[in-house]
Image 1 (cartoon, rainbow, N blue to C red):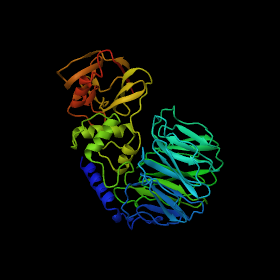
Image 2: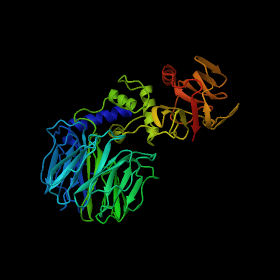
Image 3: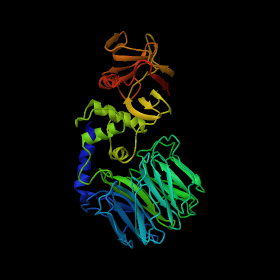
Image 4: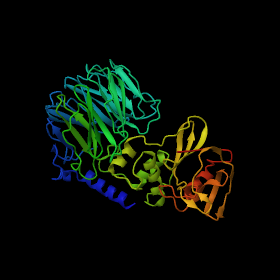
Length: 480
């Protein structure tokens, strides 16, 4: 866990000493500092860099004149720069849920802030048209887009569920689709007759008159996508990644990126475009789900992983079991399987619902996902527990080829003890077909390494036995 400890140390520095966050000289693109960088025709009008904020920044919105912008913090504190006028904030109000973003009215004389529960806070000439603050949401709200008239808006949740208010019309959602990655942002078309949703892998979902112009869904990204902005014509869009990388589609022109310009321990939080087709801003900051001055401790990381179903032990100490939890999280979210969390992965962990997804939708099932090397405990489509596993490596050995069988099986038998076979030791095995079992082992790398069984850590199989998660007769589905 040395890299995790380095990341935590860097986060401490970035949160407690924000004044050191100037962009390094090697970051030649754009202008600005470690918080806001401006590209193309977008001007740099100032930022909160070096200011001791009560809570971290979570987003920004530009003025219609393109000569200013607002920054918003998770407590609803608003900071105005250029010709952006301060219209009010929730900085001195106790919120039910943290603010996660903002949007400006077409006139620039007002703005909305939205919280993760869908609560809406309106200031200036921004009208209140409804919210999801009193609804029980399946997933948290992550994005907002106003209509061109300013008399309505859409909210989007991390599962792609879309909620329409005022004159915003519903054009569709991904709320009932199994996504590879969670939705992180949305943008509306220039007509208001459609919108795009973007997922953390850069997958684009188009609705209404929003045209599909390309995505990074089939590209291996260095860091997840965190924001999206449409061009004024509605015929293109920019995507921004957590490392400040910018991806352009349609008539969206590339003006530069923040890669190399974001200080250690910070991540890009989003992108905002000018109203003229000539530029954009990227805003960066520490992890927005955490209070300023409180970097995530190992215990906080362990607890968050456990809350999302990645089984492990919360003891505050980095070690093999924490690495197993991180492996499972990384595998479930398509990340590099290195057992350490960098700043962008911590952003994904704390700021999104990054629980693993299942294939089954009804009943109680154990799923062995060989492609992701995960064992899932699934009830009616909801993943209750996720375990790192290691299946057959495909190599030849004295007994044949190390392949884990696929198909639908059941837990046939079990041995509540250590079984020593000619191929090795199996701790408390539960067999799902013939001699193939899930079992405890002292070695569970993040890649296929077994003779055909599905290895789990010894504490993990002990938990499965103790919680009676896989009694004899339990359906077992193995697939790639």
